[in-house]
Length: 260
Ligand code: CAA
Image (cartoon, rainbow, N blue to C red; front, side, top):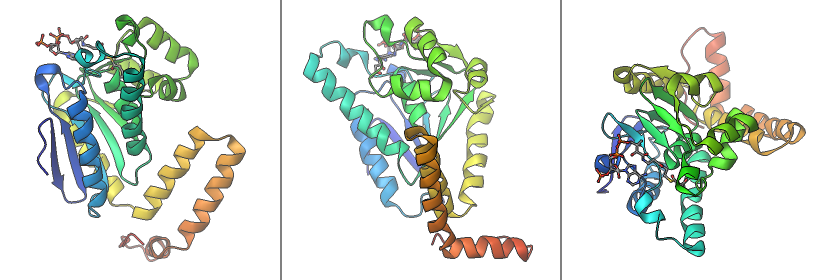
């Protein structure tokens, strides 16, 4: 499918989804959100794809937020509709069978930070600036930022970032657990691909089940999460891949996973 504001490329089981509105620092307008929906569906429907790296076009920005020009004309109902549409896209990414890696190659502000937080893993380049600056515009985060940020960095740090609107460096984001790794700008994509390839080499059903269980940890109490893990563990033990993976280990050979 042809897109205007995003680029999709595929390399085996890996897809790279690049948000491409460089003149607006890749801000998420209605067109980008619509195309991200369509592209995500396309990637989910492609049974060869297992991991998606999401990044921004150019050297300056991952995504500089929701498109502020579109926000300034919104009334209450319009605001709710915009928030709901963005939230449901990010929910889809977070709960997808695909593994999403955010390669944060510059500004990740507002909706950009929120998109990165909906991904499974966040990698940043040394020049990244990350934050939730919405209160400076007289609004609040609307694409899940008030909910995902405290779950990632704790309530106090989420309030410090959101209430001051300050953007933090990649190193500070690493220190507080908002990103998992930091790389030199030229290394960001190659390193993201290496991590993607490691995931792709593992048992496909096991990767999906582990993602579901870890997501459940954020959405349930410990007891509920543990019970959920028991159910997923039981289901994964009945797959051919679990037999293959454990047998391959015992036979000191590489596992040949089939995704079933
Ligand atoms: N929406 C629309 N356009 C944007 C934009 C955004 N979020 N961010 C940047 N742009 C545009 C600028 O208007 C500018 O366009 P023109 O060249 O036509 O003037 C172009 O991108 C380049 O930006 P700057 O000239 O401002 O670049 P800079 O290097 O001086 O500053 C920046 C970079 C600090 C990221 C600055 O652009 C900025 O502060 N952007 C806004 C960040 C922001 O507030 N994001 C939150 C949006 S609200 C939100 O996301 C709500 C939500 O949760 C749903």
